[in-house]
Image (cartoon, rainbow, N blue to C red; front, side):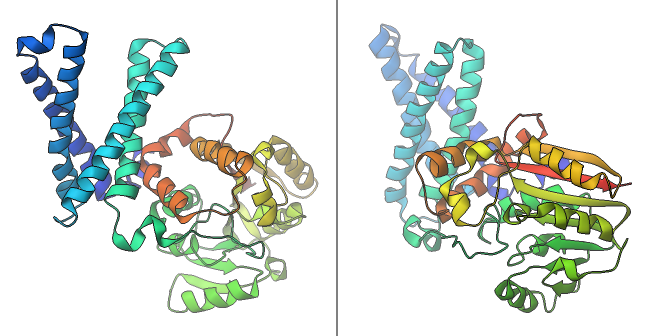
Length: 380
């Protein structure tokens, strides 16, 4: 578990945490030094002024540490980014105070409220610095957004742009444990997940879209572990052949998903795995889901529907039927359901990409909700 979690961290994540600890002690040292002056201990105003000065001195010190060490930048735009750094830092402080006050109001103790408010701001600051302050010019916010057309066959909502490397590796990591010597991906899209799984495992990739099929042939023409590229999985007649058949954000596009499920089980060896990552919670179904061809978002009722379809034909054992990505569920509810956002913006995808190493551990909690579900069946 820990190995899988830490594999999602990149250098800047580790450096951020190390520099953050250093900044904490710098702030504490400045505060201790300032309060040696009697003036800053005389009243409420003076004490808060002392804290504010200590904070400002710590921010001035932390800026070059983050610029040169955490994000490995040079001196370019030093003053401009210093202003941006201060803006997002003070915004984080205001949000921290709000979160702390809200938790106290809800009845949480001082210690719990402090822990969660500080933790929330640590994440918020990392995303703010990573996406809005120390962001490479070629990835500037104005650079664009990614539209998902209704004709985007086989490309799931969560299979985001190629640049979201950490996000895609996080999704792929949920499949890797079940792969064997012979594997197949249903609805490979443009090959985002297959490019990761094929690093260590042989994969056959299939996608109904002619455009995607042609793209996959071109992309993987020199990749040794991509053994076969096809379109219709129903055309495969070899029974009891594969060790694992998986899909990432594909089954929700298929009206007769149980037909694909049962055919996949027929292709699996005894002891083989069927793995599906699907969007979850019908309450999150939005106009955007409909636009990109989602027939459904999955729930426990769909698990029962699958079981009823499988029972007359195959014996299976459920290994996983878990919700995951609760943070994504909240974001989807706000942006897609309430605000009726009509596209997945590149910036949103990259923000999630920055957050994943810090929030991936939530997937190991038995939470009753999430943006997605991981469904794993074993043929017995």
